Length: 152
Image (cartoon, rainbow, N blue to C red; front, side, top):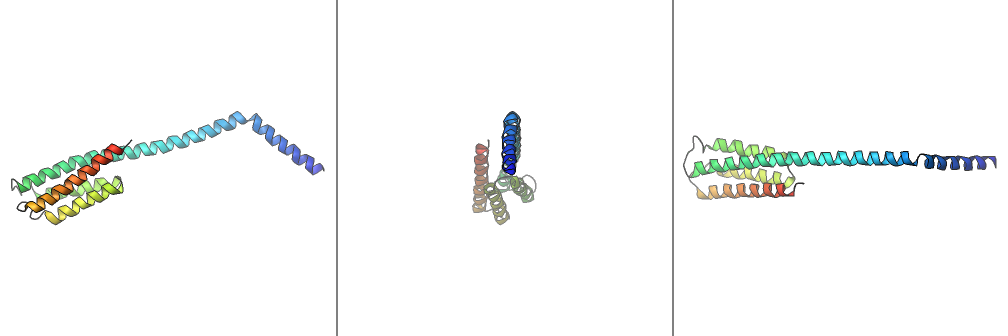
């Protein structure tokens, strides 16, 4: 009986403590919830910022690669502005920048590098090779524009 009374007193004491400290407990819950949400939101914002920056850099590199293609194919400038080695640097930079992007854009970047790899040797004299590279560049550009439109 004495144990039962002590258990009942302990239970009442616990309920009383919760009532007495309800504001503190609610404040603690709100503080932890707010901190968790804020941390999550900061991470999401940072991811979006990194993806947005990489996407804009990729657009610049895509345009520079397109310029190499034009100079190589139409001007037959294989030494300066149409140098295929210059095209390689742009294609590889695009692939590297895409590493911070979602898988879909990473695959498009790898596809661009693969297409460049398969077609750069005769780009200056073969319209089919130029068209294959152009299609791959356009596909990459479309993926980047789609990504930018989807970011918060």
